[in-house]
Image (cartoon, rainbow, N blue to C red; front, side, top):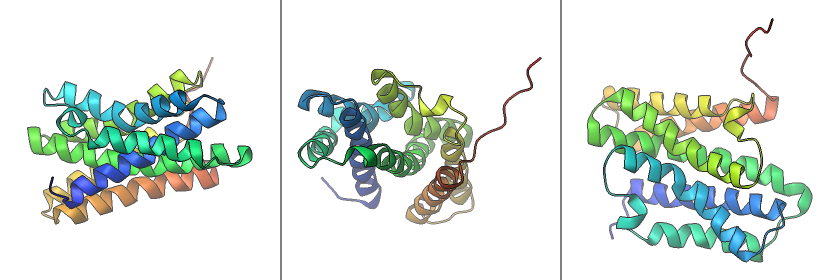
Length: 203
């Protein structure tokens, strides 16, 4: 198992998104099994859907280390509990970091398989948001992507920036970093300043 930068980023993304799921389980006062399940959903959900759509091997089936990392994230939150008042805040920031990593990693995999930047951007967004949707639905909460918050938009921008960097022959690792930072900054500013997208006019 070669520890390349992309593989390392992938593991970090899985762990961070696993933390976000486990924090959601903590808010719902679930048992240890609930922590593990909620850690797995955002950690591998988006990537699984991406790989199925792209008709390629599902990433965690090829390398079970991803499951181990996601479960470890769930157990970490279970045994080192976060204070109730801090859980939602920690969840939002863990989710923001996971979103930023997964959007560029998803775009990278799709671009390498298809060579189509439109597909790459789409799969970047899918990878970043689908797992969070599954987590929120299981927790009986309105998914973040359906709220007025700037969420999927951040993943979209990060994926676009990544593809532009690749188009202009920027080094692969630098493209990932620049695209991921773009997504994280947008999401972070949205959290700090409560940015939201405009809604349609109602009659």
